[in-house]
Amino acid sequence: MNTVHTIAQLRAAVARARQEGKRIGMVPTMGNLHDGHLALVQKALQSTDYVVVSIFVNPLQFGPNEDLDSYPRTLAADQSKLLDVGANLVFAPSAKEMYPDGMEGHTRISVPLVSEDLCGASRPGHFEGVATVVSKLLNMTQPDLAIFGKKDYQQLAVIRKMAQDLCMPVQIMGETIVRDPDGLALSSRNGFLTAAERQLAPRLYQALQQVAAQIQGGRRDYETVLNEARQQLSEAGIRPDYLELRDPVSLRPVTEESQQLIVLVAAFVGTTRLIDNLSFELN
Ligand code: PAF
Image 1 (cartoon, helix red, strand yellow):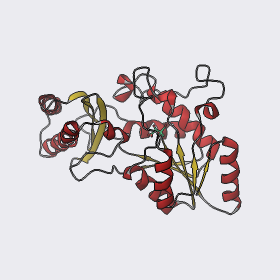
Image 2: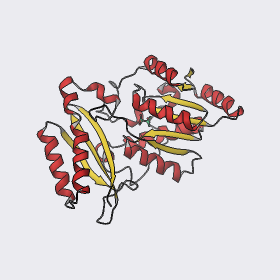
Image 3: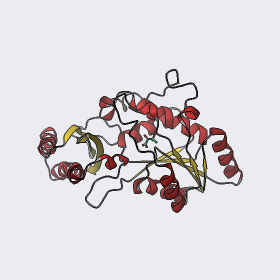
């Protein structure tokens, strides 16, 4: 497994793999890899012949008061995990390589509607930063398949829409959330939690399960069900940013006819903002 830091090196390595007739897979990440990321790499290895993992903490997707500076950068540990799992190439560019003329005048990719509420409402500009960097990474690598985790469900919806609207010749795949045994979705930000906060954090998934169980059990007073779950999170000392029920494809609010649903949560456990979601159906 090689690590390259420039776009020219990335393109040369991918071109060699293509000449050998290999199908290219890509897993874009911001590093600090955990088992959730490694599951994406394993999936990419099952589906393609040559897997590129990008590691880049993208400043364009962080707001001014967010955790860009404290976001963990652990390249050596990440390389060792990727070597063990069998990735073929790590692309770890600098911010200068990605944004040689700075970010201010850089072209932005904006994906309306699906970007606008939930995380988009609390993190203005976030999805524009994500869509911009992902489109750059896909253009540089030109993979056949790119895989993203479903924990960042809205991000996945934004990327799917972008790839579809811009006719990008790449298959976008979402992979199941990997959880700790107590239900907490794996996230690089879990490392920010104190021991006491870590104990509290599984309440997020419990809240999602509770909402799904109540609705599958027949309750149709959706807003009351959601309010009860929000209230329980608050009483446990977790500050919900949102807890919402949506259509899993459009991410628009559900109607009485909706059969496929997803409940999504973002909440502050201490100062750490965590997200999670759970899809379910009615029958
Ligand atoms: O999910 C992430 O780690 C990032 O948002 C991504 C997709 C790598 C873009 O920077």
